[in-house]
Image (cartoon, rainbow, N blue to C red):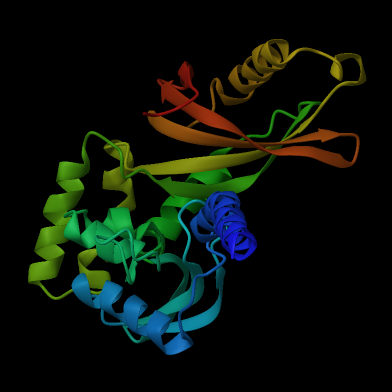
Amino acid sequence: MKKGLLIGCLSMVILFAIFIILSPILAMMDMWGLFAHASRNELEQAVHRSYENYGLTGQFELEKYEKNYTSVGGFVIHGTYTENIDGKTYQANSRFEYYTRPSENKKYKKTDAEVDYEQNKKIYQVFPELAYLGIEISPGTSEFLKTLDTSITDPKMTALKYEGIDFQFNSKSGNMYLYDKILEENQRNGQALQGMYPMDAQYLFQKDIFIPEFQFRYYTPEDKKDQLYDAYLEDLESQMKEFFNNQPLPSGLYAVKIDKYEGDKLVNNSGGYYVRIGNRQVVAFIKDLY
């Protein structure tokens, strides 16, 4: 009898020890989303709610979704938003996070866009890809960009090669209240993209909201391949000044995207910063806007 009791006690101790060992492992597995579950229909309905909350009336096509193996857990949803604007069909790629951890009551079975809506975030903060689209397809935007692009005179520099132009939507500008006024007026008039179309790119440029982005390739000189990062930046800024000074560009804020090459090999495509130009001269280099 004592032997049976001893065996029973040992079993309980072993089970308790196993539980102690496995608990943090299971918690970690849950934290990284290994137990996440949701049907395709559930995800589609969540995305539909996300657009509906903000009054967006286009169609969303779910293309793929996968478990979110980060501390957030849940799923990452990828798809395409489509809306008919002035008789033409436009699309934008969209991405959502969907939360499936019951312990997070305020996020459970919601997308990040739904959580943002409950926190009163602006439509352009939640759907920056649609804000970008609204400006991109607005009358005058492509013409403005083309004017900037064709006004550039390439000084034929050895290390720096001009590639082309794009733009950024700067929702962190201190002048976003002016964008908000246009947005609200557009909404009252029933404009597309829930008011994010149409927008005047040249006006937004003057307010640091529309930022033209000049794209470059920087070919590292042989004698500078081993230079330190600070020295590289100093050399790059010198090249930028040489390029931009005396170009017939309107005064304002511009973005610069730089792909760094060594020979024909791309070694870094994440370089970039901002340039403030005034009276055809570089006034300031800005690494981060805010």
